[in-house]
Image (cartoon, rainbow, N blue to C red; front, side):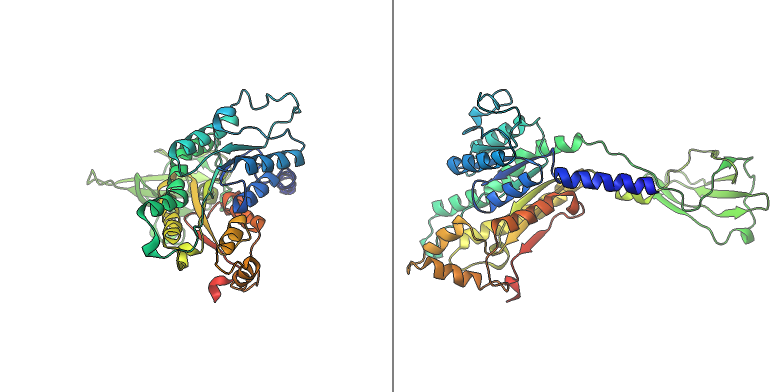
Length: 411
């Protein structure tokens, strides 16, 4: 028991030292700036290999270079998907021998072919599998009334903020499945709650008297078996007998089986194939997390004035999250989304500057006061939430829209 505890503690210490995502691959769309940058930074901090997919390749390269230098890694690679491949990823003679952990690829997520090529290329650099996709790319248009939005503008807003999430999930799914298939799932049986070792004796020919077996019954249910009840009776010779009866829908006959066991020997024998026990670990067994995290918005839940296309897109991301969680959950792939309120990003600054009075700082201060905490979130704070949802710490969470709002919804 002590050895097991020490072994577990040693494993946990190693995970902390290496990072929760050490050796895993993550793609972050819109990862060059804002919330995407926050996600890239925290995943890199936790040991992940991160691919930045962004239209702004200059900012993406700068971030990749900075993070690779922090990790004593080579400088950035890639500008477009055609520049990056497993064979040329370390072609620069000025690079050292440490492989890149952050790469940047130019990609307009509103263009289906560009997004597919970028995902294919990013995954190929690190072995062809993907552990987490973060659909973060998006754009908040300036305030506009419904009657002033053209159909073309509306569809463009939807492509950037919603359709890109659909495309990202679709193109990443084969690689997420590959990551899941590469994991070895081992079920460790737990000790029998009744510490008895079982050895065969001559099977009983008749059930024990009912007066001897009123208090111990075990119920086991399987998709291909009917529910069975095993009355157990004990005798003074340290043996007990189990009687079971089963029936099937294809036959009207009922068969009974009885077996007696000794508590002094470790083997078990019955007249038919034994039914495997359901144990706590077989019910809770899991693999390492493979997941999708969509970055939606509080606007997708509460709405926002003069932002009908943006609100519709962000609400759609939540719906995609829940639908895919149902579709992919049985495979072991989790899908969640984050709904931040107001975060201090370049996009927020751009939005605040769009008001006619030109008082950007005043606008930001008003927005900050909408949170009970009286401030805006930092990009790393949202990144930490995304990391949590993608990590093994959230292994039993799927289909959720996690509101991260500093108390804004409390009024």
